[in-house]
Amino acid sequence: MTVATTGLMTLANDTVVPDQDAWKYEASRIASILNSDTDSCWNGRIQMPNDHVTRPVKLQAFLTSLKPLLANEDLKSLLDQMEQGGHLMVGDALAGRTEFLSRVIKNFWAAVAEVNPAAHAEPHTTVLWGSIGASAGHAALTPILVTKLQSDDPSLTLADFRSMTQSTTVADYPFWFTAPGSQRPAEDYPSAKGEATTFTGAAGYGRLARQLETEWRAALHSTPRNRPAVA
Figure 1 (cartoon, rainbow, N blue to C red):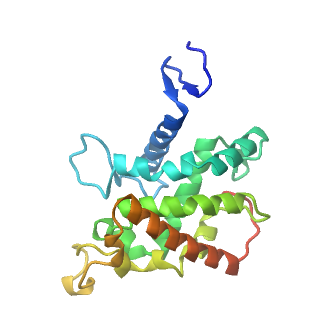
Figure 2 (figure 1 turned 90 degrees about the horizontal axis):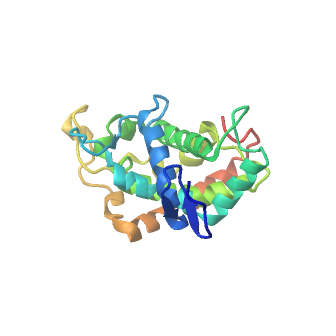
C-alpha cells in the first residue's frame, strides 16, 4: 500500500491521485447511485459509456456538473466537520459524506420533478434535465447548502427544496423548452426554444446558476423551516 503524502490522496488500488482530482471519484460514485437507485429521479437518465440508448445527459457532463458540490472548500469543510463529529445524518441514521450528498441531490431533483412535472415527464423536451440544468442547478445549490448547513435551520428535505423552487424559474417549462416531444399534440408545446437553451458553456452555466441562486434565496427567506437536516 502506498503511503499518502502531502497533496496526494491514496486509493485502495495503490494508485495516487492529486487532491484536486479527488472529486471525480466521488462524482462517479454519486452518479452511479443516482442513475441506478429506483428512488432517484435520475434513474436511467444518465447516458453511460457504450449505452446505445440516448439519455437526457451524458455521464461526463453529469460528472462535471457535480464538481461545485464536491470541490467547494467551504462545503467540504462543513461536511468533514459534521462527519467527524457524528452529525452527518440521513433520517435518524449516521451517514457518510457520499450517502449524505446523494440523498440531498435526490431530494433536490425530486422537488424539481414535482414543481415542473412536464419537464420530468418528457426530459428530452427541455434542457432542465440536460447538462445546462444539471450544471447550473448544482452550481446554484452549492452555496445554498453552505448557508443552510451553517444556519439554525439545516433542513434539506424534499419539502424544503419544493418550497425553494416552486415559484422560481425551475418551474417554468417554456423557459427550459428545447424541442417537442411525443406525449402531447405538437400545438401544446411552446412555439420556440426557451431562454435556458442560450446558457451554454461554463460561462452560461455560471450566469444561470447565479440567477437561480438569487431566486432560491429569496424563496428560502420567505418560508422559514425547522426540521431535521435530511430525510
